[in-house]
Length: 124
Image (cartoon, rainbow, N blue to C red):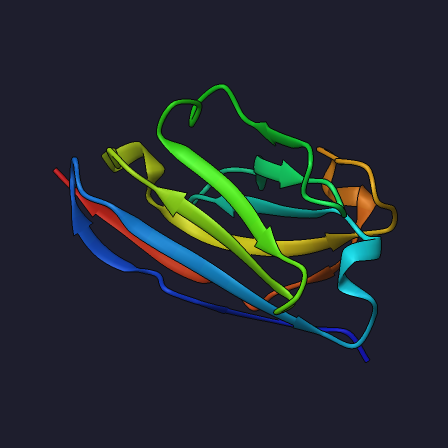
C-alpha cells in the first residue's frame, strides 16, 4: 500500500521560509515522478512543482519560480519543497503526490496517490 506522509507546514510571516517534506513508502520511489499541489479556500487545486523519477528534471509553476524549489532523495524515499520569500497568496493546504509514470506531470489526474495535506499560512 502506497503511503505519503507530509510534514513541515505552519505559520510564517511574509518574506519568510518553510520547507515541506513528504516520506513515501509502498512502491519503488524512483520509478515515479512526484509533485506538489496546493489548494486555497474557495479555489481549485493547482500544480506547484514537479520532479521526474530520477530527479534530473524539475518544473515549477510560474507563480513560484525563483522562490520555491523541489528536490527528492531516492535513497531515502523523500520529497521536499523549499519555499522562500513566501507571500500571503501562498497560503493554502499543500499536498505531495505520486504520479503514474516517471516523467513530470502537471495535471492532478496524472497522480494516483496523495498525502494528507499540510497547511501553510503566510501572514502579511
